[in-house]
Amino acid sequence: MDADELRVAFSKLPFVDEQPPDYTWEQHRWSIIGHAKNDDPERFLRWSTIQATMFTGETPWIRREFDSLEPRWMEVIREPFFGDPPPMPSCRWMSGNLVHQAYHLSMWESFTRRKIRDLDTIYEFGGGYGAMAMVATRAGFDGDYFIQDVPELSILQEYYLSNVGINAILTTEIPDIEADLMIGCYSFSEVPIELRKSVLTKVEGKSYLFAYQDTFYEVDNLGWFREFAHDKPYLDWHEIRIEHLPGHYYLMGAEH
Image 1 (cartoon, rainbow, N blue to C red):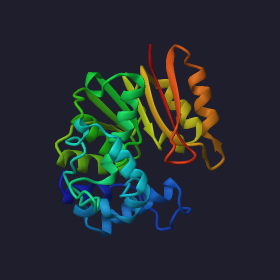
Image 2: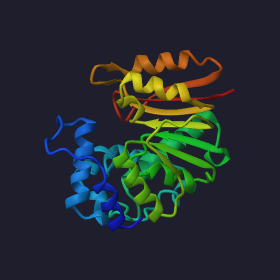
Image 3: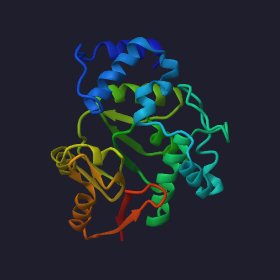
């Protein structure tokens, strides 16, 4: 997909003149359509909405995550620079966001004692612009990678992944699948409980990787994810408090 095809795809989406409530995903989706219409797609990773919602720059805690990665992750996180992502000033061959995605996967591998390269199917709920799919593929995954997302982000994912040579199955509908790994990093925890339940009636995971804040608006995420783990006692679960991000947690589970 090239920039012209991206604009055509966005032009087919419904658009309302009135801006939705500020800092909701309805507002972010509305803003992304505006960016696609008015801003340069070849620099989409600098669009203000992308920067605010799904791109992590250089911070002290990103440096901590980078320093924890084993040497084998260095080629995985080498930035292709499609979309003009801001590089880390201290290490200009990479971006903070790819470090962050690799850190999630490295934590899952560490706690579950499994490797991404050994999986056949990954399902990601809310895939951002596709960074996690690229990182997982570079880490050795070569199976079916499903990303379920809203239409605006599915378009961006197709644009990004097709230009960095990564294959993924993109859908706006809940797939009926059993996945070796279900990923929901700061996505599953930011949707209503009813949508979470709808997803989980169709998607069954053999393992899970969730990252979330302890609360999101009125939702007690810490309690909800603990109950989710309690209902699957046949998996080994690890709830990890992320020390460098106060109030943030991982929940990781895998078959015995």
